[in-house]
Image (cartoon, rainbow, N blue to C red; front, side, top):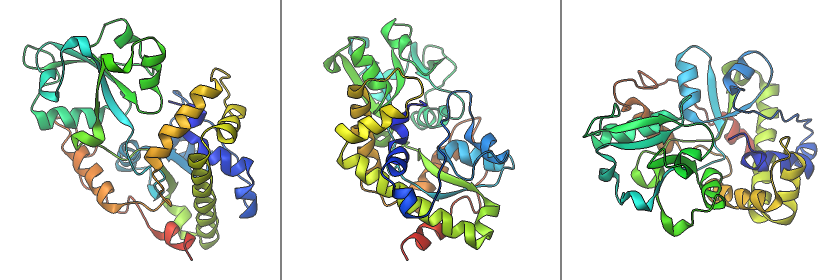
Length: 300
């Protein structure tokens, strides 16, 4: 999940001088499986973090006053990918001794909410599903330990294909199409940043330049954008082909956004999380968890 391609817009904005044009000096700190963005910002290690809304709202309810200032990803890229030879063709087929790979750490809530809508228990049994706690890899599907696994449209899905299972041997269930999508990569700050007019101005310039970076990356996924991402890939494990594909798929999620949060999508995220079964990620509707202050200022 910590792949540089997921953050292509920011790397492009820095590399192409879009931040500089807005008189900003931006330091991009890569995250990773052991780096929780809310802890970084709460500890003063960053002014802005990229986080998924479920994680941000849970963090806010626990007392860290995170606020969404912009939403670069309009759509969710999360999907459940199943092997065709399991004979799963529709969500109702999950019922009954199926094993599904699910990411935890906040990413399980859209899944639990979906199962709760389908009235499928997640504790196993003949009418339920068994949840396998999945790492950020696709091994359980390849090794047939799971019937289906969690994948992102821009990342793990392609790892399955690269591992030798062709697309026509897979069945995918995008959360977007199942009506249980929650908002993914958004930009978050601590509430106090919004009380400082100089910071508000700086954040507006940051969002404007970042979205310019996303626009550029989406329009030039091959060639330059992929090269910029590769230059910033700390793992050194990615190939240009992989990054190009990733940037192209992420372009579909950004979908021409200027960064403005669609409040209806945020409300849907809240509803999905509140309906997450016996252990919801948030227990009540959040107050003040997002603001249009920055994107409004950006358009002036």
